[in-house]
Amino acid sequence: MSQTPHSPAQPRARAEIDLAALRANVRALRARAPRAALMAVVKSDAYGHGAVPCALAAQSAGATWIGTATPHEALALRAAGVGGRILCWLWTPGDPWREGIEADLDMSVSGLWALREVVDAARAAGRPARVQLKADTGLGRNGCPPADWPALVAAARGAEEQGLVRVTGLWSHLACADEPGHPSTAAQLHVFRDLLDHAEKAGIDPEVRHLANSPATLTLPETHFDLVRTGIALYGISPAPELGTSEELGLRPVMTLSASVALLKHVPAGHGVSYGHHYVTPGETTLALVPLGYADGIPRHASGTGPVLIGGERHRVAGRVAMDQFVVDLGGRTVPEGSEVLLFGPGDRGEPTAEDWARAAGTIAYEIVTRIGTRVPRVHRNEGADQVPAPGPSGGPQPGRRRADHGAPGPRRQEHEHEHGHGHVDE
Image (tube, rainbow, N blue to C red; front, side):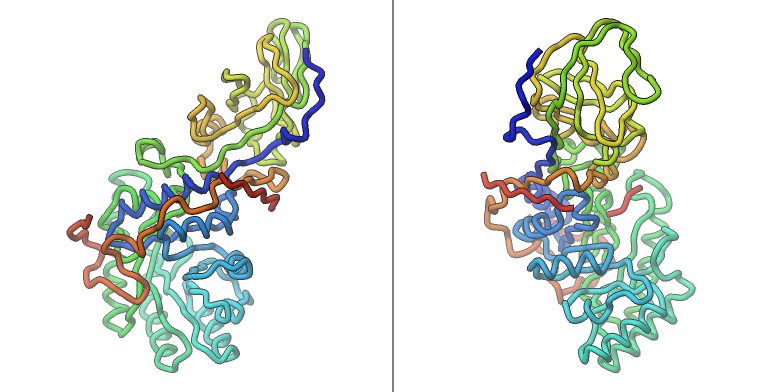
């Protein structure tokens, strides 16, 4: 058994982020919606991938909008030098509306209270606010209910006439786009078109109308309208197994999570492993200690099931995942301390994928990548653009341009490394 000390060149753990893969995913997604602009959603630190480098990479590949959940995420992007259009949609009373106006954000409004706050902020800032009205067409989460839509539209139009706001968008969000053929999708699309008609007849002239999230971008062209919002697909992860694997969808996973073996030891048969002794060695064997745990985002629900690749062979977590570490039974194999442990990645080397971990933990791959914690440094590779992007989606509207139809599909027209230690279907 090797007693080689842990090498500084072999980090405890790291998440490598392949920005070339992200750019390729942007181009693949734009090809799926050639008549629409593309929004790259980088909420929750770009689903754990690093918001600023991912936003910049997406823009270099042709994304004309960036999306965040909270205004604080959007303001952080601006402070880091990210330009272009940024939409943020999850506001609460007292949030920094004026700062958002002054940072040229597009701000989503779902109710009259929010419109009142943004109008007051526009007066204080001395300039109009860019707002987008969000409708609840059936998801039952954020968004204005259809019964309240006329009042919100009328108030927004009145604020426009006073020069206090500019309504730049009308939008909603799908509940079951990841379930092929689910009747709620057609129902939501019908409601959305009705609400668009009402708003436009009331004098609202938006730059963009948008409904499609990642699964809808990939499979439902009738939902594409002027803009598609891509979140999880941007990072190369399939929105749902029913839609196909990442490879089948033409996407490449962006994150590879790895660690180093911290300790290797021989143990006899009947040796308990980790809390509760839920795993007991069936015979004399070797145990490898992996210095990642649930504090780093490794799901405790994957105890006994989480897959890893060590020395070219697949193994599973033995026993409970602890806060800082877990154990793998190598079945008598010996590897040096410092050997690489691949938890998930694109799968090129036989390593598991984030989807494999999601199945092991009984969750979705969104959660697997997003929960990777701040103790795991992000190492961004391939930051230089690998090709000159087209000026916008092929035939697609740029900000300020609109199509006359309501989403009906028309004719289709044709190694640098930088380390950042930072920190069901959405987009």
